[in-house]
Length: 360
Image (cartoon, rainbow, N blue to C red; front, side):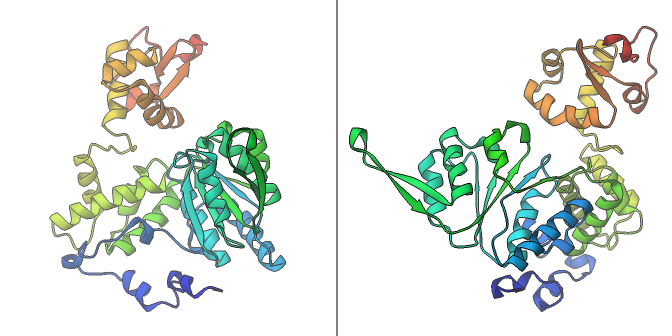
């Protein structure tokens, strides 16, 4: 690494890091707190999953290093929990430069962003999470800064106010968004590289869980990682969260090795079933099937039935239920599919709306 500050991130040349990755006995499990930062890989090679994106990003960074210039601005788009923040940290680490972290909601005024931009050093990375939530005035300021590397600072107020252009050193903006469609076209066009993150298949989640288990000092028996991966909804953040709960189970029950049945028992306690459905998911499916004969049912009625806000049902439950084929959205409302009936151990009655083709 060009910067000694980043040497601590290398798994091969740091005794301290090797110590943090060691396997420990059952009595020592959980004695040393492990932060989310320690579960994150710090080099692109150690990032599990997203193989095509990794290959594209590696080429992108290698070219920038050979040209000896900061890389173009990067947009990371995808659902929450897939590794956008981790990739931003990796980019800065691979380039050997500092990273400044902020978020769209944290920037209330254009002046807030101007203050951050004017304090950046040459080559520094500015990571803006939830960039689609930037206020309009800050977006317009960012357009100029990203393209021309300058900001216009307003001095004074009223008729006597004047604009002073301030030249900025070359830097790289990394924007992360869960809603790429909400980004205005002018801002999206300023990014030289756009990376789309996809949900993880079970096999890649298994590898990620095995790596995280070593960092946490938790020994998993064969098949335990697979049971966790199946319940993680294709999302690394959920996988790591469930792994921590399984670690709690292992600590309380003094388990030297976590077996597949231990995973099932631990997650059953937290009401997470074999398909990764939690209490609210099951409540939604039960409401559609038992109270509305499989649907169709409107979102507001469904939310009232399960005692949640309509936005919570729509943004938290529905994406996974639809993606996994438990529910369908139709012009007449939400409908439970045959898979949902089967998952709850029920038989669709005559006249139910399982045949959703009639609803379009």
